[in-house]
Image 1 (tube, rainbow, N blue to C red):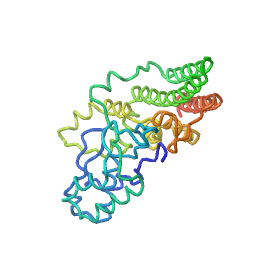
Image 2: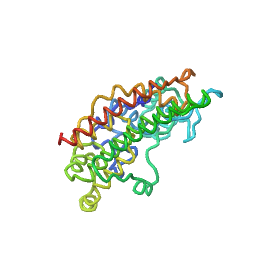
Image 3: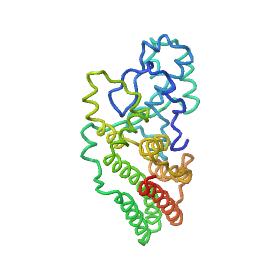
Image 4: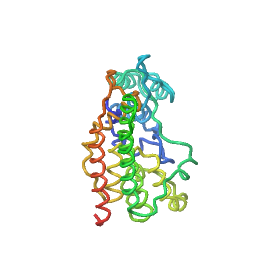
Length: 314
């Protein structure tokens, strides 16, 4: 499976609002309302259980180190977790057994019975002091170009061929990191500058618009809306286009160019980082200097188009 093949093809927001308990935090999975679940139609129960599980667990190939010599994943964040075990433990006394067996069977046929946990959030106090400082609108693009130049400079170093090959892989990874940093810093700057864009995020993105609050919380929540959006940006996975594209288009008013050119590169980065430079069949991932330069050019062109839309008022 690829980097973006997390089993979330069932959109949990297709379920009615009453299917979920009120949400207090921007980051993290939602909890099902068991009062709704116990009387829901069987088809809705199946959808809800699948959504609940895939919001908490994923294919270990996505974000779990792999030990090629030992022939298995290293579940450093806990697990492995079995769909059958987790669903029975959580919903065994809420829905019929055949519903659990259907969902568990489908999940196990897709990935197996060894799933990894999805990491949703860091310590609450971490994100504010860890935010980058973005003092002007042209800073993200300038930083991107500097980072790409630094990466290209690394490839001019000479030495052991194996070390040079590893350095080239790392520059390839760093190039995609520069892309993600640009997207984060750009979004952070414009949301800090524009109340209307904060409003758009709150009203148009389901992560915020489907949250439920009581009347007595309205004023305290209102005062903290910008911080909520900033926290969301901090935790966002910036190559998960299904989240990043709506943020830019609906929240910031800027449509991202096509991300198709980055799909294979992101898969290669996943294999370099999480499989120590091999794909899932154990074949080495070969990255040439030309591959790095081509990717660097694509990243710079992509980010230049994004920056230009802000400069021209889109």
